[in-house]
Length: 190
Image (cartoon, rainbow, N blue to C red; front, side, top):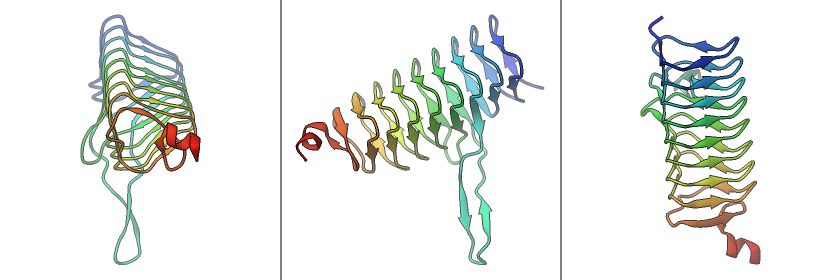
């Protein structure tokens, strides 16, 4: 109800295009994809089992000791030519829309937290994770099992080595590795 599916789109068996979702022309959803609270641009490819637009992981412990869920009421905005791998999850925003820039490629089993912003032409390899409210500039490459902590920003044209953990902002382009991530040349000497 209320979903908009553009011309030339293919929606695979078992896939759900939720209320208010917009799917740009010539986009393809493989089997069992779930889209809710989101807009996808033109020519996107979403592989089986991916979930786009579910609630993020946001909770508070109130003064009475009760755990309460924070409202997750915004969207995910996906650019043109984006590919999302099998069983990857992109959470909807709570204070800003979660965004994925044009032509970004997301491998299988990637977690993108609520409010994250990903630039154009980024590559996120399998098992990478972006914490909530993190930001990636354009042309960032994240190696397998690497992660960016919540509220951390990574400049454009940064390459993060596999299994690295980014815990502080990276402000200069280059190669980074280790935990905590540091310039790769320094990491190799340590």
